Image (tube, rainbow, N blue to C red; front, side, top):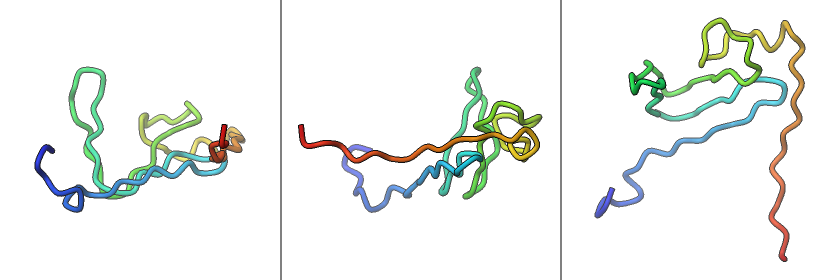
Length: 79
């Protein structure tokens, strides 16, 4: 990306959903351990609970097992 304007890089956001999957907003490349690329869209939900039958993608299993997560961003302290 050397010499490329930062504005031309597509923005990707990863949302940590309360008690649910990671929601990836924006086009990303997702590779398996052998370097093979998964087909993704502009919106992708990734399993966080570990119980999906369609890993790495979410299949809603977190609801069935009662997955609980309360992840919050913490502001950096001025230390």
